[in-house]
Length: 73
Image (spheres, rainbow, N blue to C red):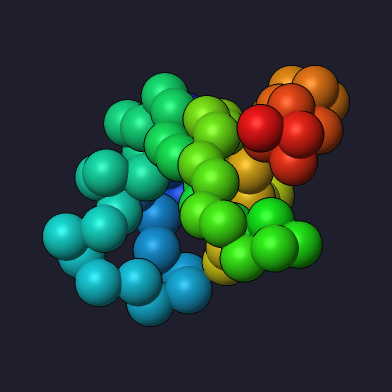
């Protein structure tokens, strides 16, 4: 693969996302995931976003302890 390969372009957009979103996703170091606890309290914790290998979705990863800590808060 060469550096000119579109699969290596961080701004490639095969999913057809709005063009305003593409640079934000390419540069994001962290974002926040919000959810609800069992008793419907909102909780938020940091996650690391990354574009999936097929460049059609954004996946996230987080530390294993964050969701458990948030549930006990």
